[in-house]
Image 1 (spheres, each protein chain N blue to C red):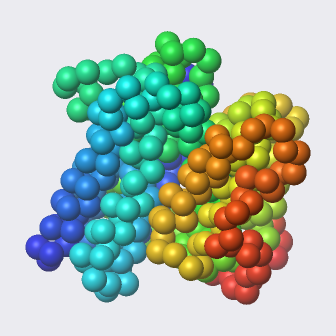
Image 2: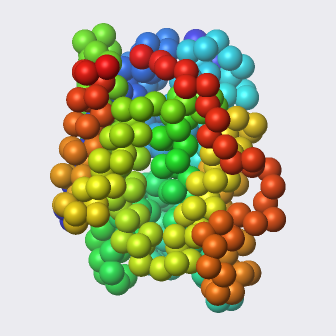
Length: 104
Length: 239
């Protein structure tokens, strides 16, 4: 069982050092407008990638087209297009997926 | 502020799922809580317990989990200039540089908004995530199937809602997003978990070297072949 504790502490330490690494990188690095633009676009790229992976391969590396999950996300997009507030978007998405799963 | 609280709610629900999954994977309740308190980055935590539950190698499990946290370093690079924290506060702030806090902070207009959004989201999430991990771990069996309630949609829907203003604001952003999604999905079957999302950062890299005059939305992923893009899944269902 101590192996599991070691893995937990090693993971925690590694994750923390990565988080800190970004914050302590000298800001001089960002003075180049292209570097600045890059770090500005990075969250867009990473978060979109995360959305895509969570939508299409949430559990492991196998891509799966889960109808209700994709329909739920489509419902969330529809809510966003209608300028619904954040919570309404979430509830709409989850409810659409849950409703479809009840029916199937 | 409302963003922060809503994200907190969505994360709380995944905290329940994490606590329950951790115990199901064979961790003790203190181990599940330690992971949430100390690692505090959901994707890495799920990755590690997945390996532990599957009886996999712990060293490669920990390495994979840390790799999955690599994007937080890139977030930190972006947030450093917004937050301007020093000394002990920087050491504390580092622990909460994650997807959600970055999404909220970068969605706010102005530096003050970003700082407040970051702080409120961080505190809300840290408390919620750890409390719901504990509850989920203690009540591991009674939770039922989260998918039946559509809870698997909450994570991606929350990120989508936070990104929405930026995705619809500029063509560059939309192209970067499209390219990133293609890269991540295309390489997911080929690479270890966590790597595809990191690799998607190259969409941002390509964008800064391309002048913004190309119209094709796929332009961003040009020259990146690794993905044949297709979502050709086998439609395998898990429930």
